Length: 118
Image 1 (cartoon, helix red, strand yellow):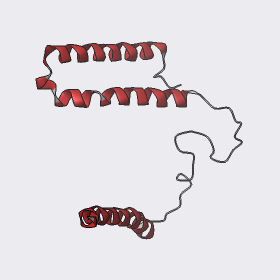
Image 2: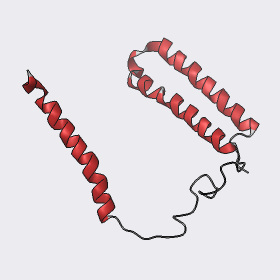
Image 3: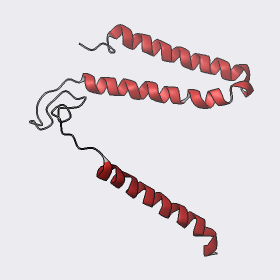
């Protein structure tokens, strides 16, 4: 009975080995060239070690939320595209309504200025 699980065990051991050895090889063989630009704040625009109560702009969160919303809505297009030839007019019209609502939301965000960065 345990012989049936031997391929699974081998697969797990190989996966664990690759998962541990690959980053180790990258760390050992990777170049180390310190640069002040590499130590500067990344994306957030604030010094990394500052007071935690420093006020910051909420637009960072707004951009992240908008990205997640449009990314998830795009994920709905993949299964629809796979079965596009088999869904008939009902599936096509349903996706047209979905894309229409997505476009209306995008235009609304655009008009409100949510996509502009000052």
